[in-house]
Image (tube, rainbow, N blue to C red):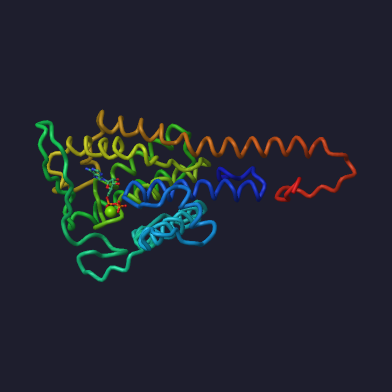
Length: 290
Ligand SMILES: Nc1ncnc2c1ncn2[C@@H]1O[C@H](COP(=O)(O)OP(=O)(O)O)[C@@H](O)[C@H]1O
Ligand SMILES: [Mg+2]
């Protein structure tokens, strides 16, 4: 299966990949509170410089996420199925802060319960506990099985969004890590999308509230989430459909970037075919016109 950038010359491809990396990294870290803007993120990643006055931690997060994207791209060609250890490697790459705390394991499943706050139908705040640490190995091995099934063969666009949304919602609802669940989910759920020859789905920063709200609305429908034993225990319902619809709309920005790159490529191809015959054919990958 060809990746989404397969038909692009090397320079157009490199620019598109940088644009997507900047957008994906910026949005996913900003959703979690990173203070770097899209411009800052591009500057840091492209120039290797720091932005004055912004925390070192925010810079490290940007680098960690950009590196994690490389890992996910490398898995586009992976022949063997993904394992627990692969997810741990991704977690270690995303969580760049050096944490020396046995209750905050990096590159391992959580070993303590974790919670979220939500506003119930009664308008009051409540605590929701995610599945208990001892349930995580089973739940995540089922989740990995589902991921590997989605990766087994290329999917149509609609099925790729469905796979992304389903993997993403299940991952953040299981919440297997003490931290980094959102970023890892937004990376790894894109693997079937990428393997099917599409650009990644990237949740826009502006959609943060609607995105988190829809995850919370879904979780409200699950009684005793902390006792969840198996993946089929996660309901398929209207709230899940709603999340899928949002994911579909979140695909637009990277599709637009790809379309623009393809248009540039097309223009170049036209120019190339109109060039006098005696001109040497430099082949794909050369920078015609530079
Ligand atoms: N009820 C919820 N409300 C909001 N976000 C949730 C909820 N349940 C799971 N999430 C997910 O958890 C993520 C935050 O979890 P966290 O482990 O801190 O990840 P990260 O450190 O990458 O932000 C959110 O981005 C969202 O994807
Ligand atoms: Mg966090």
